[in-house]
Image: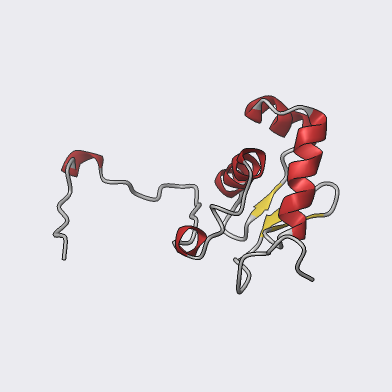
Length: 109
């Protein structure tokens, strides 16, 4: 077993006033590998922008500007994340959801 030690004790991450996290399952259960770069950028942005309940009010134009995405690429990435059951969007509000039981497989129903 590999022994771990903190490399920079003065720089250990802490949760501050804001709150965000990505479940370790995102990596180990294949969610990371199942996303395109645009989907991943949008997902990470929404995780970082969301509150404790996964809610964020950032608008489409602001998200596109921050991520450097064209409108069509953003809309497609957003639709894919919804289809993959990772986020919900009601036209104004986003919610980053808890991870589903398994990765959405393309073509699976």
